[in-house]
Image (tube, rainbow, N blue to C red; front, side, top):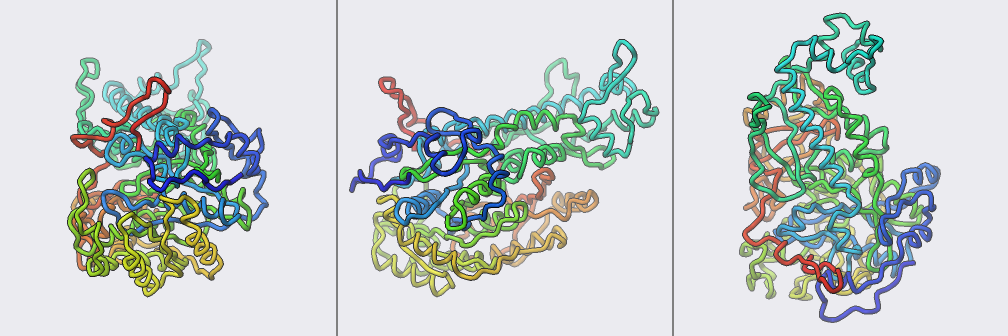
Length: 632
């Protein structure tokens, strides 16, 4: 089924022109070719489908393929082509080197697609197609997350309002109203709350007055509510809002805000869950705040866990698509790496590893650089999946390395300085310090590292050779120039060969830290080992949260640092491989359902904003053909 591209043009057209010129293999035909049965496939048109997790059960005794994670150096604001490399490598392995291969990547958020970044299907002749469907709605997973997140938000504030206006007995009467014969019943989610309270009764009429009060009143502390509403649009005006100002809410107002949908804990859960039953448990134990007595209140306490699962029941199935060269791809889940854990789903990787078999390869991608996305891949995703990677691909560009060497500021939408378009070995050599640090980061986990130099038009042979030399000196198993953007899989054949060789090398995978360490010890290990920092400063709100999470028993969870992706440090202006800095942790939030704590470093925003001229200015519909135009 994989096929080499035959219509490559020397002057590379726009991404959307390339994608629309391709003819996708019918997705049911592709699925059959790679071993997916018709009953395991749910079609969404001709070019995409969802794959049922029953496939994993059918292939449970089959050996896994090789597992490769693609990461990068610290990028410029323009991005360094990590997804493009992921796709190009997969096309090289499948269409040119005869290997069974699967690509596993995240689904992009509508926010960046219509903002500055654009889509995330890859680029040039290394893309996942159809790129319009990849970038716009896909099968509705992000919409399901938005709906579930906001249902819980509405349930929280409604419960808080009703409790402020009713006695304990009145609350109980409304939660468990009597039937005509006087009988009452608990819903399944209510039984979960009773078990949590240690009440082993199933008939509401048998509860004592004290038990009725404990069951019915959550006593939410409104100042403790951490659950925010979400939208999949970069809407800066919603970062801070006041709710409850309608006349019927009777003064139940409070200040809250919106996050981008992909920052929702429900998105993190989708990426980290391993089954429908596991997802139900994770959704139910999400902590939304505390009671006035300081006890954690969960989505199941609110009564919404089951309803959230119903809204998410189809989203758990990975989305099957394909690359330009006909190799299969799973597009599933899309948490940001700077404010979440930045990796596609565990279930997609599990299915793909079974489908390719022991001689095949699954190429997945972690967001941004090896200091955040890769670190979270190893310490969070691999903990919950139990999967061990065979190799790391570290994407580097000469443009970004020159920036780290002291080159002029790189700004999206602005022309590049001549420093980036003309040979400058001195600037480049200084900037290689960032790549060296990222290689060291990857090697800390005991996994072989291959550096892929993603070639841009202005890169010179001398510059490419310098980067390769520095990478090998730093301990990379290999360093290879890759020209997949301009040539598709053919341009990544040498990278593919290097990855195959690296997967055969011995490895000794280990986590960066044991979960038994304290919250502060885990944070400080990441800061010192991954970022090169000297220490951590905890602001009062962070200290308060650490004490709370220690008391509530959340201290054994892994850490998901929310920090800028534009520097190894917390300060986006610090380039290269800075040292000696102190990282300020201003707050820590608990994603108990997803299974991690996330410290907020510096001034990280969980809701991006739009610029003066966002990407949506270019996007339109060709009314004659019905095709999307202007998407990048």
